[in-house]
Each structure stands twice: as structure tokens, then as C-alpha cells.
Amino acid sequence: MKISKLLITFLTFCFLCLNANELVQGKPIKKKIVYLVSDINIPFWNIMAKGIEKGTDLLGYDFEILDAQNSAKKELENTIKAIKDEVSGIIVSPTNSSACVTILKLAKEANIPVVISDIGTDGGEYVSYISSNNKNGAYKIGKLLTNKMIEKGFSNKKVGIIAISQKRLNGQERTIGFIKALDESNIVNANLKQLVTWTQEETYNYTKEMLTNYPDLNAIWIQTSSIYKGALKAINESQRKDEILLVTFDAEPEFLNLIPKEIIIASGMQQPYLMGKTALIQLDSHLNGINVKKNLQLPILIISAKNIEKKLPIIKLNVLGIEK
Image (cartoon, rainbow, N blue to C red; front, side, top):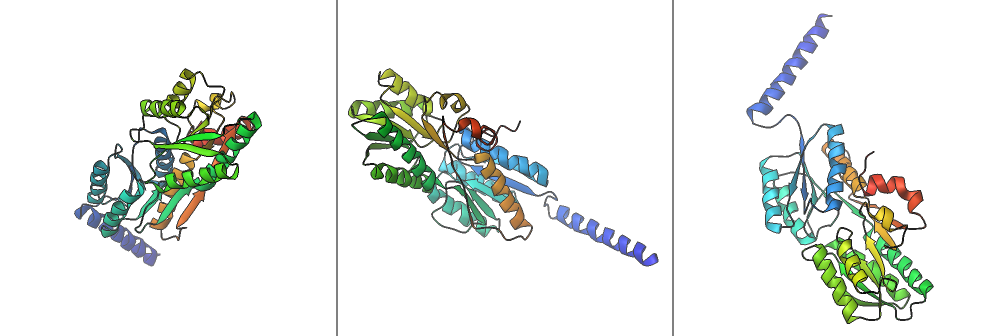
């Protein structure tokens, strides 16, 4: 009995000493994870952040979002801030794949583990890379589109692409997969325009330009979802809405109504909420000494009027981040 009391007293003393030592050194007792994000105002990243935050609450981490506002300079400042704060780990969705190399280099020097959630990197060391199978998802949305074009009997088969940055690994993979699907059906890629400002106005102008320059255009694919209204506006104004099929990538809440009506024919939907949760699980496992997979690819949901009702529960949670 005496031995047990002595042991308990000794362990309690050790615990208090360790905590006191942490406080003396100015280190927080509670662990903290930071999410470095390219632009939190884009719904996709906002939903991913929700997935991460939900898990940090359950796992007992402090959590902070550092928004780069689509600026590489701001992103670097946020990285330096996270390092100065001595965070336990970083989850990053970088502005582009080349910028991620610098983030990984600085984090490695500070001995802070990093998990990449989407976009990718051109090099550097990281714990895990969570991505969607962009190439396969884009290929499948391309096949769905080409089949629809053939079904409608369009004789002049041309498609315009409004793309995310092709400096991003995910952008490159989407283009490669989609073009492969077009080639297999002998359908021509008329033009590719890369988003710079990511605004409805920019998308409107790109779409209007394509419709003007290519009278034989029959479809437009936008490699993201948040700027879809610009494309729809241009299509409707052209008086060619019955001739132009619109397909997208990712999703907005309005798609739950637009896809069944085939105003948007289909969308390849990533699962950002699930990606955020998965990124956190990988980082937490690493911090607890558990081996994790270096690369994890989550499936992309190919959603059209034919299957949207069946897939609605998974779309609401994993794609749109609607928790109830």
C-alpha cells in the first residue's frame, strides 16, 4: 500500500514538472494545427476547412486558418507565422504546386510535419498528400459529355475549356484526363483559357469569347464550380443555350437543382469535407507515431441527373459540408 502511494506521488510530481517545464519554455500544453489555405472565400476550401476543424475539436487540438487570399506573398507570411507559433503540424492547400516547395522547405527546417490537401507539390518532403483522382475524374466527366454530344447528334463537335491554373498539378491532371476522353471520340478541344481572377466576370468574358470565335462550339467545361454563373450568363445571352452543354468540376448548393434540370449536364465532384477530415487523421496519426500512407487518392463522384437523387446524402456531407 505504501509503495502504491509513493508511486502515485512520484508520477504526479513528474507530470507537474513536465508541465511546468513546458510553461517555462513558453510552449503551449495544448497542441495546435494550422491550415494554410490559398483562398478561404472559395467554397471548396471553406468546406475542406470545416472537415479539418470538425476533427480538431474531437481530437483536442487548437486550430487556426491562415488565408493567403490567393497571394503567394501572403502565403509565405502565413507559413512564417505558423513556424514562429511553433505549431504541432501544418495542413496546406497551396496557391500552386511550385509555391508548396518553399512551404515544405521552411517547415522541414523548423521540424514541423506537413500534410498536403489537394493541389500538390513540385518537390519537397511531406507526411502525406491527400488528393482526388483528378485525371480519372476528368476522364469520366469527359466521357459522359462526349456520349451526351453524340446522343444529341451534334455534327460539329467542339468543346471549350475554362481551366484552373495549369501550374497546379491537379489542373494539369484534369486537362490530361478530359482531353483523353475527347480524343477517343474524335471531339476537338477548341480553346483553353486559364482562370486568373477567379471571378464570374472573367468566366463570362471567356465563355462569350469562345461562343463568338467558335460558332461550331457545342460544349464548355469549367474545371471548377464557384464561377459557373458567369458561363451560364454568357450561354443564355448568346441565344444558343439549346446548343451548348455545360459541365463542371466540384459543386455548389445550387447544383442540387441545376443538375436534375440538366442546366448543368454533369459535374465531377470532389469530396472536400472528407479530404479535410482525412488530412487531419493522417497528421494526427503521424504525431502519435503511427505510420501513414504517403499518398491517398479519394474518388471523384460523377454526378448527373441519372444518379443525383441516389447520391444526395454523400453529396450533402462530403461534397458540400452540410453536417445536418
